[in-house]
Image (cartoon, rainbow, N blue to C red; front, side):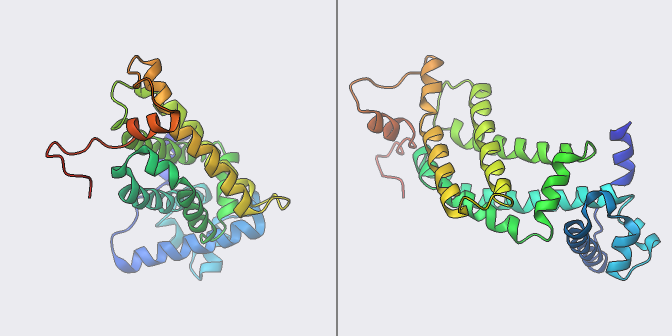
Length: 245
């Protein structure tokens, strides 16, 4: 019943520029109000009034307040996903070791995008707390895991994809959870926390070769751990013998 109700409440984004701008304005206002009054008190009437619109005008875009917050969540997740895609373009083609070495950049860039979003912390809390909205966060985190799995699997022939996905899903959750914690925890600097988590996730990514070993792929013996990682987690050179440019 919830799913059917959500389908009616969540409407397709408008195509016309003016309508698109109006919808964006409603979302910006809703983010600000969410931070001011919380998810229980916010209402469509309140959002419409702050945006200078009538309630019927708002209902052309959103069926209820949960549809507004869902759209806020999807907009935030889309912006976070754009950060991921740009990061993958820069580093995925170089190998897992390169991605691992730059995981801290992904965390800090994602945090910056999140903090630029009006009412971001309250949007995130709503996505955790409301049964009507949990699917938005879950779908996005699974998408991030899918993209990282696709990128890493290229360098791990014979890997059990489900095991790889599970390992990376935990890593994704750790990264997002740390960023959310920093909105409340003032006894740890954001820079130090993100650096520590980046170190943990770097180790997790470099250790992905162990999953391949468990699946029978193995790695060459007689090499140091770091050398095995460098060899097994980097792309195969082109057949012509030219190096990767």
